[in-house]
Amino acid sequence: MGWQSQYAQYFTARSMPLRQLAYAMCGDWHLADDLVQHTFLQLYRHWRRVEQATLDAYARKVLVNAYLSHRRKYWREYVVADPPDRAADGPADDHSAAIGAALAALPPRQRALVVLRHMEDMSISEAAELLGISEGTVKSQTARGLEKLRAALKQPALEEFRG
Amino acid sequence: MDEIDIKGALRRYVTTGAPPFPLAASDLLAKGRQRQLLRVGLSCLGSGTMVIVTALVTSSALTNLSAPVHPGLQVPGCERSLPAQARPTASPTEPIVGYTSAPPVGSTSAPPVGFTSTPTVGTTSTPDYVEPSQYPTAESPSQFVGEPDLVPTQWPSVAPEGPLPRDVDPARLAAMACYVKGAALILFPNASFAPASEPPMEIARWPELNFTAGWQPTYSVRARVIDGRRNGIFQVKVAPLMPGTPPPQLPQLEVRRLGNGRTAYLDRGPFGGFVIVDTEHSSIAIFFDDLLTDDQALALATAPELDIFR
Image (cartoon, rainbow over all chains, first blue to last red; front, side, top):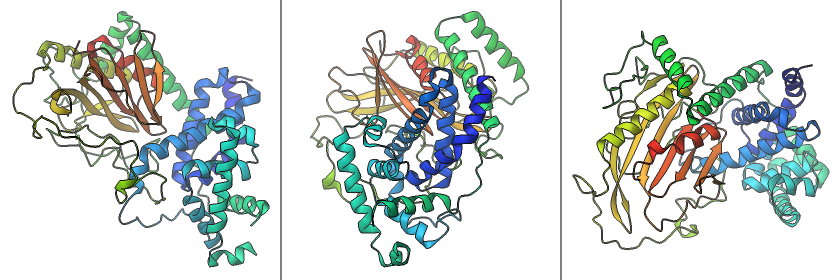
């Protein structure tokens, strides 16, 4: 099997989880697709140099770095006086919208850490290595992120969801 | 809410309401191959294999002989022509790969001729969501950290008309424009070129105020590149590097030490970026949207033809 077949198989297996990870971080399906495309183009470029055992870690690192880089570069564009109407591809229900709003209130790195630690089940050491920060920073930032998330999720609209 | 609830909420958030996935492995393989070919093309340019370069340029020029040529393409001292976009302001009719969340970069906000600040590339996209930021906003100027205070300067606040002491010799500017045009023909062999504001790849000059050294000339060569379904601004901007100028302070910049003792600063997101290379006398910036790779931009930025203040 050629490496391009392996690449295609890997895309088939991992593109959707990476898309979900991207969406959890950025909250926008179009941007998530762009981030996934960027990730797989980087994978294409470095495929033969990346060990198969570390492909997932590499792909996640590229994706998270692309998201954080994008946020740094385009943060000014998010500060607008009149927010545009939400596109039709936003969260499908109130619960998802509330979760999205709560995530959106977090700073980018906290948001990434909450998603990596609590959706991707990544360990503290793995998250620290991926983001290039200390384990102590991972713990403190994740704790702060979770605290803010819990506070945001105490809104009345989520009472039903929280059960 | 305990951890299990958080995980469940996140899982539900990312699995409900997802639109169809637009990417396919075959598309990515094709796009990856295309980018790889472009990287190889620039490495040929950088290593000075002029035979290959000449062949590529010639074939590109021959294949585009029938394309309409913009009347402003004739850069002094440079005989090669760029294939021009017949309708420079028209948007491509097909969706643009890599820009699915934003309108074509720079499609509506090309800065006017004679602008006096650094042109901004890729700031016209309108996000379809608004997210509070950890960074200071215009409403909270007191929160700015690390921004130097404005200090009184002895220099006039209005740019002086006429020549400046560090104006570059026209022949050197023409060589710079020629080099950028030649590189563009190799990097984008099937592209057409439209004006960003001035005609494509024509030298633009404007003064910029350096608070210690006064008004300095800045030169730029740029064009909008329309390459199949890609569309973006490709710009080379060169300014004099004053002694004691601190390195760029943006925290997201990747710093690379180059072999010749120079330092490069890269900003590369999924939608493009820029590279800055400081030589002894020049500060060379390449803005390339999503059109180039890091290596291509670096190879271009380190070309001696761009060190025009040497």
